[in-house]
Length: 197
Ligand code: GDP
Image (cartoon, rainbow, N blue to C red):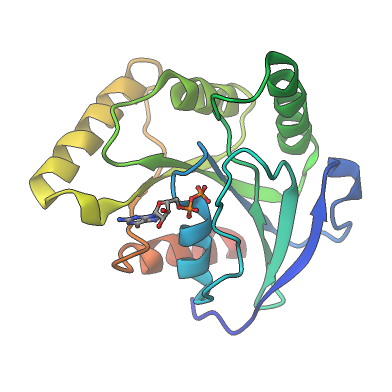
């Protein structure tokens, strides 16, 4: 898919206020600092469409961008930031589950994980929640430039093994690096194909 246009539409703190039309939507989510903003900028060929976060955990908003006037890219807040209080964690959870449970036009979520890290309970729990709620998702491994190909393979294998402990089938996954522009076409092709269905 060629990106012809990419524009910010709106930021919301409530799912009810998100765009009302029925364009297909793809949501990006992951732990703070995983490289989500950089990935969105790489996918859309824009330097600063999504703001790379100086202060992780600060922006708790649902950000809609319209791509090629055809589909929405949704930037969801990063989770798992250690310094937020328990009550704001609960508020955050509600906010995110509202989004996933109410957005009918969501075609797929993408859960971002840093390829260097071992499978983390917070990410696995989140994927389990998506699976149980029957929300389609793919996994995007980020920062692939930080490891050698063999090490990437090992990390991905370990992740897959972990997932197969509770699922029979693996979700689609993508290996990316925003600094080296790796994996961009794979993610965009996945969006193009699922968007047409
Ligand atoms: P966000 O908090 O998930 O939106 O993450 P950012 O996109 O702001 O990135 C967090 C940090 O990781 C920044 O210092 C980025 O420069 C760095 N980063 C993001 N993507 C990559 C990548 O593909 N490779 C490398 N080496 N660093 C990255």
